[in-house]
Length: 257
Image (cartoon, rainbow, N blue to C red):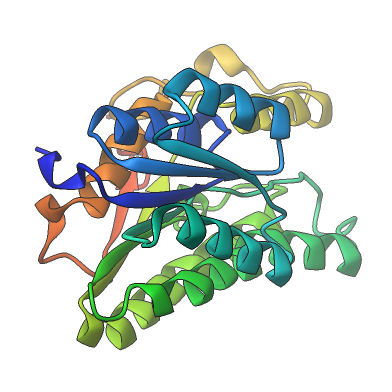
C-alpha cells in the first residue's frame, strides 16, 4: 500500500514520542528516509540507532523556535537534498481549570501546539514546490468534543484543523497536500500523564471505565494513528487534501447504546 514511500524523505516532528515513533518505524519499513525531530535527544538518538543511521537522521529541535526549524530543514536538505513529507506530531496538554489558567500558560501551549505547526508548514513547503509533497498535522478529538480542564489544548488543536484547510487550499496549486489526523485517547505517555492529572483533580475518576462508552470500547494504540498518518503521507491519499480524519474509536460520533 505504501510502496511509493520508498526513498522518499519524511520529517517526523515529535518523532521520538509514542505516535511519532510508530510512524518512524512504519516509514522506515516502507523504505523511506526518516528525519526524527524531537526535544528528547536520548529517545531520538536511540530510535535512529535502532533503524540505522545510513537511512535516518536525528535532529534535536524545539518546535516553538523558528531558528530550530530552519536548522532542521538545512540539515535535512544537506543530508538528503529533498523533503517529500512532514508529519507535525507533537503537542503539550497541561491540565488546568479555566479559572487557574494563566495568560503565560495559555501562550506556552499556543507557542508549541499551534505556532509550532505553523512553523513546520512554513519551513518545509518551499522545498516541496516543483515536486509536490504531503504535510500531515496532528490535532485531537478534543477539537470536536469538550475535554474539561484542557481549554488551551483544545483551542490549539481546533486551530490546527482550520490551519490545515487553509494551507491545503493555498498549496494545492503546487501539488502539496495538507491533511490532518485527530486522535482520541491513545496509549501514550501524554495520555498517561493526563489520566494521572485527572485522578489527582477528580477523585471520582475511574480509569477502568474510561472507555466503556466508546463505540469500540477500548483505548487506541499508537500504531493505529500512525497508519492513518502514513495513508496521508503516501500516494494512497493522492486525491485527499484539507481533510481532518478522526481516529478516536468513534467517541465523537456518539456513545454506545
